[in-house]
Image (cartoon, rainbow over all chains, first blue to last red; front, side, top):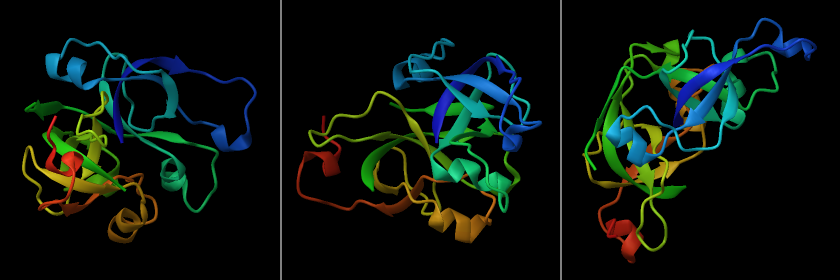
Length: 95
Length: 94
């Protein structure tokens, strides 16, 4: 999983049926430098992830990428390659 | 698999139900020259790796799926704590 800050939400009009009712968030990955500083900045390349936890804008989330991102929809198949697995309360970083 | 250095822990109340009770650590992937990656990663840790230690991380979600169920989104898992290895990256030197 990588860490990212939620920057916004994505709403689809036409979509494949697997995406019906799914909430999509725009996530900006966070670099170690920004995470340690806690300055609310990201620094990575933004991506879209499925979110079932209700993450709000500005919140730090950890998202899974790859084939495992579709696991929560098992046994259905979904073309999901990024999934918000948790909303971060706090991080203890000792660098 | 790759080597990573543990640099912290994550606390999260709201998470996928399969991750309840799991220890999640923040790690930085190590390059061959021993330098750490810019972006941190969150890794599942059942071995109890200490802060600053070098670990072996697997990107295969199979272990997590066996332990946490088919619906778990977990993928990165600490599969070993590095004792010693040849080369700079294993030692975590920069």
